[in-house]
Image (cartoon, rainbow, N blue to C red; front, side, top):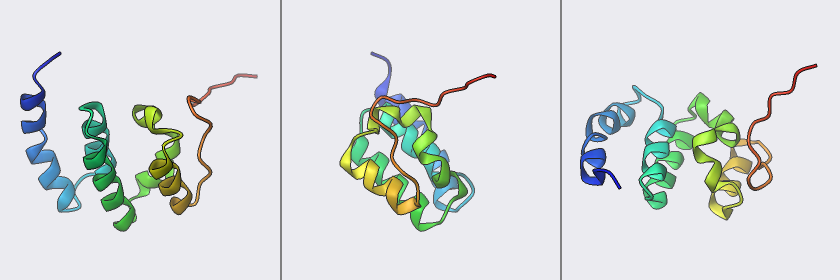
Amino acid sequence: MGDMEGARASLVEPEARAARGEGPAVEIACAYHWLGDDDVAFEWLERGFEARELWMFFLHLEPRLRRLHGNPRFDALVRRVGMAPRATGAGPSLRSG
């Protein structure tokens, strides 16, 4: 299953940088989502929204947050950013031609 405590401990410095505005909060949110702590992930997404981080504009396209698509909190945040939520399970598509 991996070293979850070690993974959480490795977030201390990136969290401090993001809290100072030196890194995107969405990166921290993705890490906590991956660790299964969606409540903390949403706290970081809210921080990114409040800080008006550019990355929030692409929130609905972030593949690492795909499992949150269809979650009412996520969809509400995407709408607050000014975008339309994607259909559940829909990922970015690359079409040629």
